[in-house]
Image (tube, rainbow, N blue to C red):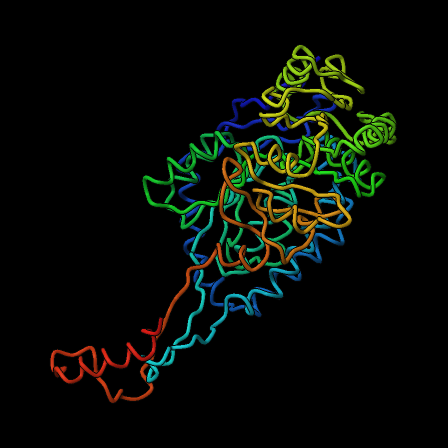
Length: 500
C-alpha cells in the first residue's frame, strides 16, 4: 500500500486533517485547517504582541530564547519521537537536526545586539559636523512557511532569528509535519506566556497563501522552486518582502589529490541520509579521471551497507511525500534508458514507501537525473578530465544552493569558482551547522539568507540617523548659500577627489 497524502475531514468546529506516519499510514495527530479569517486573526494578535516583544530589548528576548532552547534540550527525546512519527526518519537523524537548531537559537539570541544594535558610521569630511549612526529595527510580524524534510532545523533557522531581531512570528509548518510545529510553538509559549509572540497555523496550500496575503511584514519560505515563485507573485501584490529557500542540485567535486575515503563517505551520507530528502544533499559528483575508478569503487562498497527501513538498524526511513516516489523512479529510469548504469540499486530500488540507495554512472548531462532535483536517495557520478571541467559542469544548472569540494591543495580556489550560496571543503554540508554562516542560494534555489549576521539583518530594517553636532562653517543646505561658498566647495572637492 502506498502512503496517502493527509486529507481534510469534517469536524464540528471546522475542517481538520490527519497527520499520517509515512511508514505505517497510522494517524499520529489531527489538526485544524485554518481559514483565511483564522490566519488574519492570528496576524492581528501578532501585531498586538509585537510592541511588547520588541520592548523587551535584546537582553529580555535573549533570556526568553535561552529558556526556550533549555526546554527543547531537556525534552529532546520527546521532540525526536514526534519528528520520527511524522517523517519516519531515524531518531538519531531527528536528534542531529534538533541539536543544530538549538545551536542556532543560542547564536541568534547571543549575537542579536552586536549585529543589530546602534553602530557609528563615518560622516566624511564634507559632513564632519554630523554624527552618523545606524541601527536595525524589528519589521513587525514575520510569516514563516516551513518544510517537512527538516521540520525542526529549517523553520527554526528563520523563526529564531526573526524572534531575536524583535519580531513576532506566525508559523505554518508543512501539512506533513504539523505535530512538530505544534510541539515547538507549545514549548515556546511555556516560556513566553504573556503574549502570542509565536503562533501556529496549520493546513494546506490555501492556509499558506492566506498568510502571504495577510499583510505580514515579511515571508520566509522554504520549499519547491515552483511554490516559491507563486509566493513571490502573491507577495508582490502587497509589496511584502520574501526570503525564498528553494531546491537544489548540489554537486561534489573530487580532485586528483583528494582524500578518497573521506570523499566517498561524504558522498554516501550526503546522498542517502534522510532518504535523499535534503535540499543541500549530494545529487551529482564530478571526479578527476585519475581517481575516478577508485572513488566509484569506494562509493559502491559503502553504499551496500546502507539500507532504508523502519527498524532500528535502518540508516534512513521512508520517502515522506508519496508523490515523490514517481519522480525518483522516473529519473532513475531515464538515466538507464539513455545509457547510464546503476552500480547500486536501480528502478527496482523504488518501493511503495522506501527507496533503497541508487548509484548511477555514465549518465548524460542533459538527463533528468542530472538536471532536475530528484530529492531521493540517488546520486550520479561522472568522470572529468580536470577540475576546470568539473566546475563548468557543476555550474551548468539553474540551481545554486550548496556544494562540496574535496581537494588537498585547491579547495579554496575551486570553492570560489562555484556558483552556489555555500560550499564546504573536505567535509559534507558543514556550512549548515555553523550558526555564524549565512544559509541560502542563487538562481532557482532562491535568494535572501537565514543564519548568521545576514540572517538577523533579513528580519530587521536599517534605520539611519544623522545628528548635527555643531553648525558647519560652510552651510550647503540653505538658499542663503553664497556663490563664493559654491566656488569653495568646488575647489575642495577637486583637491579631495580630482587626482588622476
